[in-house]
Length: 193
Image 1 (tube, rainbow, N blue to C red):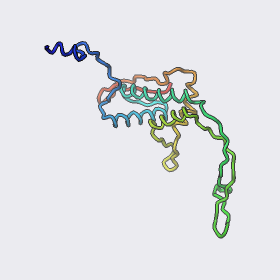
Image 2 (tube, rainbow, N blue to C red; image 1 turned 45 degrees about the vertical axis):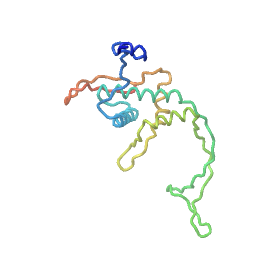
Image 3 (cartoon, rainbow, N blue to C red; image 1 turned 90 degrees about the vertical axis):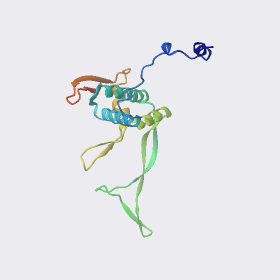
Image 4 (cartoon, rainbow, N blue to C red; image 1 turned 135 degrees about the vertical axis):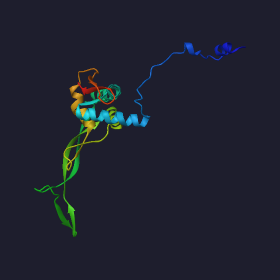
Protein backbone atom coordinates (compact mmCIF):
# COMPACT_ATOMS: atom_id res chain seq x y z
CA UNK A 1 0.00 0.00 0.00
CA UNK A 2 1.29 3.49 -0.84
CA UNK A 3 1.64 6.56 1.36
CA UNK A 4 -1.86 7.76 0.41
CA UNK A 5 -3.43 4.69 2.03
CA UNK A 6 -1.33 5.11 5.19
CA UNK A 7 -2.73 8.54 6.02
CA UNK A 8 -6.26 7.11 5.88
CA UNK A 9 -5.26 4.06 7.90
CA UNK A 10 -3.65 5.91 10.82
CA UNK A 11 -6.09 8.82 10.88
CA UNK A 12 -3.57 11.46 9.87
CA UNK A 13 -5.02 14.56 8.21
CA UNK A 14 -3.12 15.74 5.12
CA UNK A 15 -1.70 19.22 5.63
CA UNK A 16 -3.96 20.94 3.11
CA UNK A 17 -7.09 20.08 5.16
CA UNK A 18 -5.57 20.70 8.57
CA UNK A 19 -7.17 23.63 10.44
CA UNK A 20 -4.88 26.60 10.92
CA UNK A 21 -5.25 28.12 14.38
CA UNK A 22 -4.75 31.73 15.43
CA UNK A 23 -2.05 32.62 17.95
CA UNK A 24 -3.44 32.89 21.48
CA UNK A 25 -1.17 35.78 22.51
CA UNK A 26 1.49 38.16 21.18
CA UNK A 27 5.11 37.22 21.84
CA UNK A 28 6.28 40.88 21.87
CA UNK A 29 9.78 39.74 20.74
CA UNK A 30 10.62 38.54 24.26
CA UNK A 31 11.23 35.29 26.10
CA UNK A 32 8.34 34.03 28.22
CA UNK A 33 9.85 35.26 31.52
CA UNK A 34 10.64 38.71 30.09
CA UNK A 35 7.16 38.95 28.57
CA UNK A 36 5.50 37.96 31.86
CA UNK A 37 7.55 40.54 33.81
CA UNK A 38 6.77 43.26 31.26
CA UNK A 39 3.01 42.59 31.36
CA UNK A 40 2.99 42.40 35.18
CA UNK A 41 4.82 45.73 35.44
CA UNK A 42 2.54 47.47 32.96
CA UNK A 43 -0.66 46.10 34.55
CA UNK A 44 0.56 47.24 37.98
CA UNK A 45 1.32 50.71 36.60
CA UNK A 46 -2.09 50.89 34.90
CA UNK A 47 -3.97 50.01 38.09
CA UNK A 48 -1.78 52.28 40.26
CA UNK A 49 -1.98 55.35 37.97
CA UNK A 50 -5.20 54.83 36.00
CA UNK A 51 -3.51 55.28 32.61
CA UNK A 52 -0.22 54.56 30.81
CA UNK A 53 1.30 55.20 27.37
CA UNK A 54 2.69 52.16 25.54
CA UNK A 55 2.70 50.50 22.11
CA UNK A 56 -0.49 49.12 20.60
CA UNK A 57 0.56 45.45 20.75
CA UNK A 58 1.59 45.72 24.42
CA UNK A 59 -1.62 47.58 25.28
CA UNK A 60 -3.77 44.82 23.80
CA UNK A 61 -1.94 42.20 25.89
CA UNK A 62 -2.12 44.35 29.03
CA UNK A 63 -5.86 44.84 28.52
CA UNK A 64 -6.50 41.07 28.71
CA UNK A 65 -4.82 40.73 32.11
CA UNK A 66 -6.09 44.02 33.60
CA UNK A 67 -9.71 43.33 32.64
CA UNK A 68 -9.47 39.85 34.19
CA UNK A 69 -8.23 41.30 37.49
CA UNK A 70 -10.91 44.01 37.57
CA UNK A 71 -13.65 41.47 36.70
CA UNK A 72 -12.48 39.26 39.61
CA UNK A 73 -12.51 42.28 41.96
CA UNK A 74 -16.04 43.25 40.86
CA UNK A 75 -17.25 39.67 41.27
CA UNK A 76 -15.82 39.28 44.81
CA UNK A 77 -16.06 42.83 46.19
CA UNK A 78 -18.80 42.06 48.77
CA UNK A 79 -17.80 38.46 49.49
CA UNK A 80 -16.49 38.81 53.07
CA UNK A 81 -17.61 38.54 56.70
CA UNK A 82 -17.15 41.24 59.36
CA UNK A 83 -15.53 39.57 62.39
CA UNK A 84 -14.90 41.15 65.80
CA UNK A 85 -11.58 40.18 67.37
CA UNK A 86 -9.76 41.20 70.54
CA UNK A 87 -6.19 42.29 69.95
CA UNK A 88 -3.36 43.29 72.25
CA UNK A 89 -2.17 46.80 71.38
CA UNK A 90 0.79 48.54 72.99
CA UNK A 91 -0.23 51.54 75.12
CA UNK A 92 1.33 54.77 73.82
CA UNK A 93 2.06 58.12 75.47
CA UNK A 94 1.49 61.64 74.05
CA UNK A 95 4.64 61.43 71.87
CA UNK A 96 3.53 58.13 70.33
CA UNK A 97 6.14 56.06 72.18
CA UNK A 98 5.33 52.80 73.94
CA UNK A 99 4.64 53.01 77.68
CA UNK A 100 6.93 50.75 79.71
CA UNK A 101 6.77 49.71 83.34
CA UNK A 102 9.25 47.88 85.56
CA UNK A 103 8.31 44.29 86.50
CA UNK A 104 10.84 42.16 88.45
CA UNK A 105 13.64 44.57 87.54
CA UNK A 106 12.90 44.49 83.77
CA UNK A 107 11.25 47.11 81.57
CA UNK A 108 8.12 45.61 80.00
CA UNK A 109 5.76 47.18 77.45
CA UNK A 110 2.19 47.71 78.69
CA UNK A 111 -0.54 46.24 76.46
CA UNK A 112 -4.26 47.03 76.31
CA UNK A 113 -6.90 44.70 74.90
CA UNK A 114 -8.87 46.33 72.09
CA UNK A 115 -11.86 45.02 70.14
CA UNK A 116 -11.50 45.43 66.36
CA UNK A 117 -13.77 44.54 63.46
CA UNK A 118 -11.91 43.05 60.52
CA UNK A 119 -12.93 41.81 57.08
CA UNK A 120 -12.51 38.05 56.80
CA UNK A 121 -12.44 36.92 53.17
CA UNK A 122 -14.60 34.02 52.09
CA UNK A 123 -12.69 31.28 50.21
CA UNK A 124 -13.50 32.54 46.69
CA UNK A 125 -12.46 36.11 47.55
CA UNK A 126 -9.26 34.84 49.16
CA UNK A 127 -8.49 32.90 45.97
CA UNK A 128 -9.14 36.03 43.87
CA UNK A 129 -6.85 38.04 46.18
CA UNK A 130 -4.05 35.50 45.76
CA UNK A 131 -4.49 35.44 41.97
CA UNK A 132 -4.16 39.25 41.96
CA UNK A 133 -1.06 39.12 44.15
CA UNK A 134 0.42 36.68 41.61
CA UNK A 135 0.20 39.38 38.91
CA UNK A 136 0.66 42.70 40.72
CA UNK A 137 4.09 43.96 41.80
CA UNK A 138 4.52 45.73 45.19
CA UNK A 139 4.07 49.53 44.79
CA UNK A 140 5.49 52.33 46.93
CA UNK A 141 4.16 55.89 47.06
CA UNK A 142 5.30 59.16 48.62
CA UNK A 143 8.50 61.17 49.01
CA UNK A 144 11.94 59.52 48.89
CA UNK A 145 12.40 59.46 52.65
CA UNK A 146 8.93 58.37 53.74
CA UNK A 147 7.83 55.88 51.08
CA UNK A 148 4.78 53.81 51.98
CA UNK A 149 3.68 50.47 50.55
CA UNK A 150 0.37 50.63 48.69
CA UNK A 151 -1.92 47.60 48.93
CA UNK A 152 -2.89 47.24 45.26
CA UNK A 153 -5.34 44.39 45.95
CA UNK A 154 -7.18 46.54 48.52
CA UNK A 155 -7.26 49.35 45.94
CA UNK A 156 -8.83 46.97 43.41
CA UNK A 157 -11.48 45.74 45.87
CA UNK A 158 -12.27 49.08 47.61
CA UNK A 159 -11.77 51.79 44.96
CA UNK A 160 -11.89 50.30 41.46
CA UNK A 161 -14.46 47.48 41.84
CA UNK A 162 -17.32 49.65 43.23
CA UNK A 163 -16.88 52.03 40.26
CA UNK A 164 -17.50 49.19 37.78
CA UNK A 165 -20.14 47.26 39.77
CA UNK A 166 -22.91 47.87 37.19
CA UNK A 167 -20.66 47.44 34.13
CA UNK A 168 -20.24 44.11 32.31
CA UNK A 169 -16.66 44.13 31.04
CA UNK A 170 -14.95 46.83 28.97
CA UNK A 171 -13.14 48.39 31.94
CA UNK A 172 -10.25 49.77 29.84
CA UNK A 173 -10.06 52.06 26.83
CA UNK A 174 -7.27 52.22 24.22
CA UNK A 175 -6.80 55.59 22.48
CA UNK A 176 -4.32 55.90 19.60
CA UNK A 177 -1.83 58.75 20.01
CA UNK A 178 0.28 58.41 16.85
CA UNK A 179 3.55 56.93 15.70
CA UNK A 180 6.63 57.07 17.90
CA UNK A 181 9.51 59.14 16.52
CA UNK A 182 12.27 56.55 16.99
CA UNK A 183 10.84 53.42 15.38
CA UNK A 184 7.43 54.56 14.07
CA UNK A 185 5.63 52.14 16.42
CA UNK A 186 1.98 53.06 17.01
CA UNK A 187 1.74 54.55 20.50
CA UNK A 188 -1.50 54.34 22.47
CA UNK A 189 -2.91 55.54 25.76
CA UNK A 190 -4.53 52.73 27.73
CA UNK A 191 -6.71 53.94 30.60
CA UNK A 192 -9.36 52.73 33.02
CA UNK A 193 -12.75 53.92 31.76
